[in-house]
Length: 280
Ligand SMILES: C[S@@+](CC[C@H](N)C(=O)[O-])C[C@H]1O[C@@H](n2cnc3c(N)ncnc32)[C@H](O)[C@@H]1O
Image 1 (cartoon, rainbow, N blue to C red):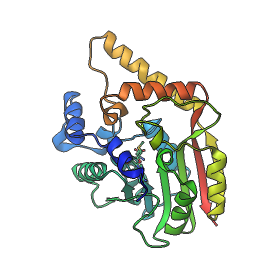
Image 2: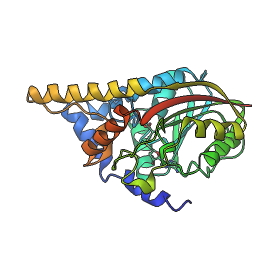
Image 3: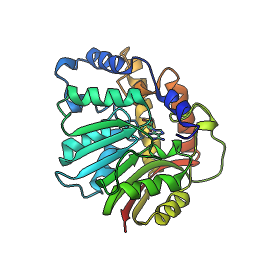
Image 4: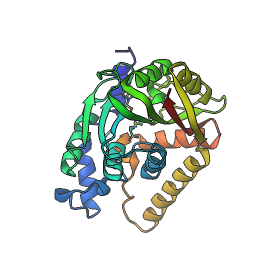
């Protein structure tokens, strides 16, 4: 285990998170005793763009029913459940944060997807899977916590079958400029390893991947947060509670984390970038 990992797992760990999510959803009228995967959509996709972004990524992967998909850094399981539901794939998620693994497993059980999604604790940089175990892999907003992109790519290449697709959707650095912490993935600079698209590309090709497609999504990201702010303001103006959103997962200082991230996005320093890779 790398020395930064325990601190990163503590950064993400929010006590009582599953009960909090269920309570907030119940408050908006969701029947949490008969939960559906779609009820969770606004809160279980921990990346910019939520389910719309996941749909875009998965749509480029050519997944077929029965495909064995690996979700690296699976969080509380939203992207894995969406892939299982929309593409009929069998998903294994791996995540560093034990409480997220537990919540992801529990939520999948609640929505009847326990047989299509399996979540295990472990590091992206040393995965407990045999060689060529998966047909496809994805990583959504996780690389910012990984100090070694070459190791990420060599691990992904090791566990994928030849010809396997690896979809990356990470926040990347597009230009120089200081980042202000906390950010959603890091309480301070010791946990943050944001890299450039060049770094990702060169690490990927060194591991045997070829680049199929690349798309920066900066404008999409800025719009996502503008829409979120407008929805919050509208609810406040009407004296209503704010609608449930990804901020639920980010703990008490969610507002500061989002403000700092929005500044970096609006300044063009960071942007989410999609990178579709194929092994061989
Ligand atoms: C911003 S969240 C994204 C979660 C999920 N991919 C999603 O989009 O909903 C980042 C996730 O990366 C996980 N993570 C951070 N470092 C990791 C590592 N070394 N190995 C595996 N997971 C890691 C965290 O625990 C957290 O769940």
